[in-house]
Image (cartoon, rainbow, N blue to C red):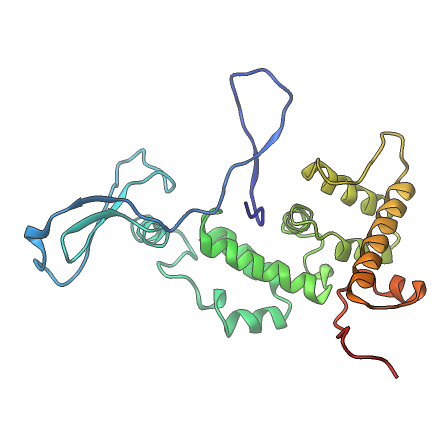
Length: 262
C-alpha cells in the first residue's frame, strides 16, 4: 500500500484499548459499479444523464451519484464526477465546478517557481476531498518539489509542514529533512524525526532504547545510513573515501560505475 499523503484520525471503537491512529482515507479507486444494462434505451439521447441524491442529510462523502450512459448502462459515478456534482449543487466560495488552472502545468510550475507552495496547498485542501486521487497527486507533486530543492523553509511554520513530515517518514525518506534540522542545530527535532519513522515502521531494523539520548539516536541513524550506502557503493564497484562518502551520504550517486577514473 502506498502510504503517501495519508490522513490520520482517531477512531472510536467498542473495544477498550490504548488510543491509536488509523489510516482513514486511502485514495479512492476510479472503478465504477455497473448497476444495470438496458440496451432497449440505447441511443435515446446523445448525452449522458447524471442523477444526484440531494437528500437533506446526505453528505458530500456518502451522497449517491449515478450516471446513465448513452448505450443504456447505469453505473456509479467516478470520483471526479461525484465531486463535480457536489460542487455543482452545493456551491462554496472559491470552489468552482472545475479545478482551477493553478492545479495543472504550466500554471502549477509557475506557482512553485514563485514559491507559492502554501497558496496551492491551501486551495487544494479547500477544493478537493482528502481521498481524491487528484488531491493526492497534487500534494505529492508539491512535497516532492520541496524535497528535491531542499527548500523546507517554504512550508515551515505552515499547517502543511506536519503533513510533509509524515509523508517523508511514511516513505522512509527522512534524511533530507534531517539535513534541514541539523543545519539549524535542532538536534531534538532530528531525534524526534527518527523516532517518528520508527513508530510508523515498527519492523524497521533500527533499535531505539527508552534511555537513549537525542544525540545517540541521531548518531546511530547516521552510522546506519553511511554503512548502508557504503555497502551499496561496494556492490556497484565504486571506491570512495570515507570523507567523500560523508559529504554526500544523503544523495544518490549519479556516477557511472562502468567508467574508470584517470
